[in-house]
Amino acid sequence: MQKTSKLYQSERRNAYLFIAAPVLGYILFILLPTLYSFYGSFTNWNGLGQMNFIGFANYLDLLSDESFHKTMFNTLFMMLGIPLGLILALLLAMGLNRAIFGTEFFRVIYYVPVISSIAAISILWQWAYNGDYGLVNQFLNIFGIDGPSWLMNKDTVKPALILMTVWKGLGYSMLLYLAALQSVPKTYYEAAKLDGANSFQVFRHITFPMVKPVTFFIVVTSIIGGAQIFTEINVMTPTGGPEFSSATVVFYIWQKAFGNFEMGYGSAMAVVLGLFIFIVTYIQFKINEKSTFELD
Image (cartoon, rainbow, N blue to C red):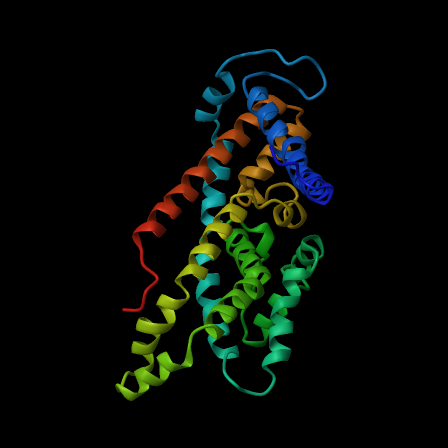
C-alpha cells in the first residue's frame, strides 16, 4: 500500500478542519435546536420547568385558535408585495441597464435600504406613517388628501407594511436582475431588431426568458423571508396592530413563547410554519423543473 506524503496528510487534515466548522455550526445552532423544538411541540413546557409530554394537544389547539388563523392570513396577505416588488425591480433594472448618465448613483441609492438596519428602517417608516405629522400624510396634504393614521387603522396597516417591505428589498432584487440583464448577449437584441421585433416582443422572447432563473431565486427566497417577517411588525406595531391585524405567525410565536411562556405551544406553531415553508418551496422547485429557461 502506497504511503501518502506528509504534505498530503497535512492538507487533508486542514481540509477536514475547515469542513468541521460549518458542520458543527449547523449541528449546534440549527439541527439540535430544530429537533429540540420539535420535541417541545409535544409538551406543555414553559421554558423553565419540566417538559411534560402531552401528545398532539398543542396541534389540536391550533385548529381552534382564531389568533393563529388570523396571523397566518396576515402573513400570506403581506406576501402580496412579492409580485409587486418583482415587477418594480425588473423595471428599475431595465432602466438602469441603459447607458445613461447617473446610473451608478441610482444603483447605490436603491441599494442603501438593503444594507441598512431593519430596526432603523422600521423606526423611520413608523415616523413617516404617523397620522399627525408623518411625511406620508404631509405629502398627501399637498393634493388636499387627508391621510389616515396608517398603523392605527386595521384597513391600512397591512398595505402600509407591504409598501415598506417592498421598498426595503427593492434594491436587492434590482441588483440581481441587473446582473442577469448585463449577462444577456447583445447579439440577441441586435438580431431581434433586424427581424423587426418591437419592444414588447423583445421583452417577451428575450429579456423575460433570460431572467427566469433570477425570478425563481427571488420568489423562493422572498416567500421564505416573508413567512418569517417579525422585526418590522415588532417595531412598527408592537401590539400586533389594531385588532391584531398586522401580527404575523412569527410575531405570534414570539408572543406566546417569550411573552406568555408557552414554549410548547410556540414550538408547535414553529413546526407548522416550517412545514408550510417546506411545502411551498418544494412546489416552487417542482414548477421550476417543468419550466424552461431557453429563448422562445
